[in-house]
Amino acid sequence: MQRIYLDNNATSPVLPEIVAAMLPYFGESFGNPSSAHALGEDAAAALRAARVSVAALVGARSPREIVFTSGGTESIHRALHAALARSPGLRRIVTTTVEHSAVLEPLETLEKQGFSVIRVGVDGDGTLDRAALDAALTDECALVTVMAANNETGVASDLTGVGALCRARDIAFHVDAVQAAGKMPLDVKLLGADLVSISAHKIHGPKGAGALFVRDGFALAPMFPGGPQESRRRPGTENVPALVGFGRAADLARRFVADEHGPRELARLRDRLESEIVARLAGARVHASRAPRIPNTTNIAFEGVEAEALLGALSAQGVFVSAGSACHAAARRPSHVLLAMGCSASEAAASLRFSLSRLSTDGEVSGAVEAVTEAVMGLRSLA
Ligand code: PLP
Image 1 (cartoon, rainbow, N blue to C red):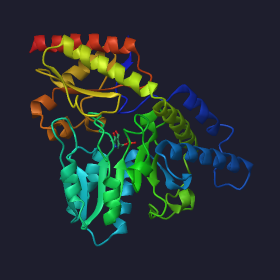
Image 2 (spheres, rainbow, N blue to C red):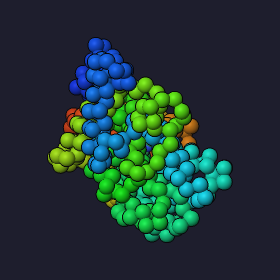
Image 3 (tube, protein in one colour):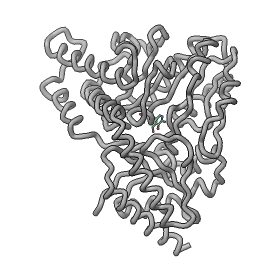
Image 4 (cartoon, rainbow, N blue to C red):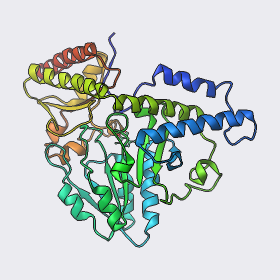
């Protein structure tokens, strides 16, 4: 059976050369980076190299600004709490309506604890209401947290000048760059961000590895006491093989973004997928098609079809996509992102996300178009 994987925003396959880079650290180079002997030094050197690579991916000034974590969710959680600990008197947090649950859920908890959360909206194309965002950045504000690119629609947020506004009012600025990293240029200096979260498994690295960029001079209290690792900011013996894989993934992702041909080719494949589906199927509509987007993502509504049924029919044909965020797959609620863009609940429940990767091919796009056309027509004929 064919196997066409178009769910790379959920997770991406670990590239063979990344697996190869990790393997020695499960085997002969198994040392603890804190050990004072040669094996320990070997692991510590590998960790230093990984930190340099991840720092370069986000444009950090120094590898010291990278704190390794278990992934995007942990990085985000640490960022939110570090920002709030910095200004205990301030109770206002600004975010958007289309963030990932890794941001929205901790903010809901904080709201119950008395913080006031302002959620800035987006328009029908998923474009952030910058006037509303800028107006919310008042002196009462402790933290602004905004995603660089949306996981469901791929829409890239216009964050121009947000860093400067935050700096002027001493507001902590966190960017969730989990989906942007490795797909679009990312530079923490240009963003003017204090904190930036990224994750290895979205860029062909292993699961269980992520990073929080923490601007030099910005305090990040330890998660809990327990040891000197990560400059006391995250205690516990480091996951050396995964972090080595993360470093290699960061190198490859940085090269991919720097060479304009790569992202352009990825966007061409994505655009081909969209245009052929829309040409073949009446009642298919691409969400956010006019907004600037990361090049690998499209989200398409199929009138008269339940996304869950379509996802199942495609899976049976070896085509793997998702309905909304993978984290919400079990909840089967219509996407909060599409609802925030003004879609009706029924259109949101008829929408699928296709997320390609730099491994995607024209052949796979053709196979996916065939499978989607057949599955949608089949489901419509049953209805
Ligand atoms: N933020 C965004 C935008 C995401 O898409 C995801 C995962 O899908 C996360 C955060 C959470 O990252 P992780 O799976 O590494 O915890």
